Image (cartoon, rainbow, N blue to C red; front, side, top):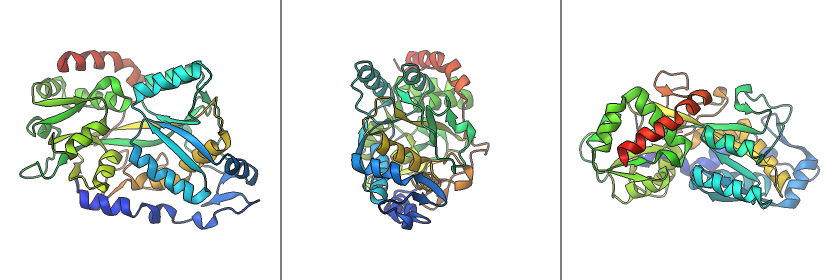
Length: 354
């Protein structure tokens, strides 16, 4: 199951058209509710307040390019801009907790992953409860702590490789990372996504597989974005890449292709929440509502993410459709299992990779 960069270019180049379908023609004029596909994204009063604010600040641990596509679409719909500040999850937590503690949190919205880090933010009081519009049919399992934060999408980790540096048939297995050298690995303490990747590798591929990977010519990166950048430059041949990060790099002209491995791949939950200190809370609320709406979830499939609501569809990666979330090849982990194994996985990984 290969996703070529040319197909990715076509997919991302069509984002604006595909994400706008089915409802954005109802862009609200002054005094009107913003309703898309039968869902009230914002009442007239909330939308007016949000437009008066005009902007919001968005701390995210997801790839910046993918988030910017989303923000551009949101601005076209509402006229509201978002300033995206991309930080790897561990550093995002450090910054958000420090700013929150001093009463100077700049973020109005936070999107991040990793249940240990999400719990830190929640326990510190960073998030503000937000109730979704009544006409949203949003899955209960994606609502956390009575609306303090929500699962916004599920992001798969695939195998990426540089098509110009790789010779022969495309890789089909995680085992190929042991022979496509030099390859890359993502530091486990940097993010929740890499924790779930390592848990998948230990549980599905086995500890011997990770031990063998550590003995190869492998470079370690603090997140997937610099790993993908190094792959684009030809400094490494292959490595684990989140779907959206790989597609964004291909859209920018990188010779990167992605593969859904035969043994399966991990999919992690990425959450979004309104901050308690939000200065632009109305604009932030409209953005979160839109992100979790049917249209926003449809947009997520276009950039390679699984929507929270399975009825929205499957990720569209070029001419390839990934298997549904309940397929045996799609590996997920519960919050309890994540927290149970996190420290042991981190110690094991760092022992191997020094």
